[in-house]
Amino acid sequence: MPTQANDLDAYWMPFTPNRRFKAEPRIVSRAKGMVYYTPEGREVLDATAGLWCVNAGHGRAEITRAIAAQTDELDYATNFNLGHPKAFEFASRLVNILPGDLNHVFFTNSGSESVETALKIALAYHRVRGKGTKTRLIGRERGYHGVNFGGISVGGIPKNRQYFGGLLTGVDHLPHTFDPVRNAFSRGQPAHGAELADELERIVALHDASNIAAVIVEPVAGSAGVLPPPVGYLQKLRAICDRHDILLIFDEVITGFGRLGAPFAADHFGVQPDIVTLAKGITNAAVPMGAVAVRSHVHQAFMDGADAAIELFHGYTYSGHPLACAAGLATLDIYRDEALFERAAAIAPHWEQALHGLRDAPHVVDIRNIGLMGAVELAQIPGKPGERGQAIFHRLFDDGLLVRVTGDIIALSPSLIVTEDEIDRIVAAIREGLGKIA
Ligand SMILES: Cc1ncc(COP(=O)(O)O)c(C=O)c1O
Image 1 (cartoon, helix red, strand yellow):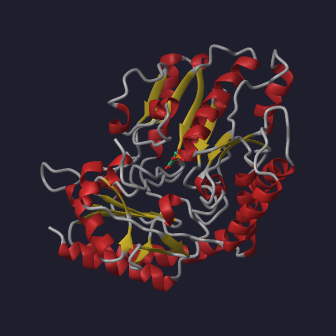
Image 2 (image 1 turned 90 degrees about the vertical axis):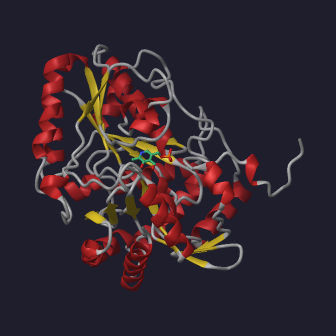
């Protein structure tokens, strides 16, 4: 049946209550800096950097120009057995800002693909070293690693898993680190919970290290509601992985590119992962792209031990897409020239102070923050989880503020260009909105 060009029904929207949305749509058609504009020209302040991704703010002309120029020069080239200059240049530029010897980069198109790629590299890494029994993967409760089968298998968000039948077998989960009894209203890293990393030793004792390939965690759990790691927790995970020849994968899809006021969370916490997954801020979201960075010893194992000419049987049609590489290079220039990671670090104390000022606002039961990430957790309406979250989301959008809501948690992650005045406006709008909802 023919549809109208503007028929809302044709589009099955992702992670959206479609029936409710179509009844009450929220549309933006333009964006610049920190602001979205509706088709009617109403301003909506973006407190989520798109979806944790527009780290340098919306509508950056330098990136747009780089994409346009690249389209004219080389629109597409496969990266299978053929190269183009910008892919090599971009990989080199990334390696230069990645911590330690994360010296090799594999390109994907999204965070989800980066996760699948990282898990496959981890499995194949042990195999090319003659340790093919090391196949188990360890994730964490409340972890979010995208939506593909590997990612939801190691991930720990129940709704993202329960409808999709048999997930990967051979997966265990560490406990999450959220502890509202001991850590409510923590500023930065919570003091309590490092011992939760010892659960990894318990899993190792159960399965034996000879069967375990990798541990994957978000350094700061993002999508499940901004859960900074307890002090010392990531260091413990690193030490246990070292002890048992287990790869440590940091999923930095959200925390990469300055979100914590350092280039990567690995820098911020001073913990060196073996593999890092990236996406989102890698191109300031102007072109979809993801990447996986691996340390030298991981890459070298393939170069030395692979039993076929192709060392890794993996890749995407759009791996290293020229437009994405051009966008990524222009994005890295902006991060460097405007010192945006340093800027995020400098403004983070104001962010923390302002956010925790909401402690006495209606419905608030916890506030968490680190870098330019924050969460304001609301009390659930008894028997109606997520209702209050939806109410505040709609209220704030109508009042001109876009936030992200997970259940009853307001998650916040403004672009790194946010000003103190904009932070104050975000916080004031939330306080006012909370006063208006039931
Ligand atoms: C930590 C983490 N990993 C993976 C993903 C998936 O990325 P994408 O939506 O680009 O597939 C996300 C998305 O929010 C994420 O936060």
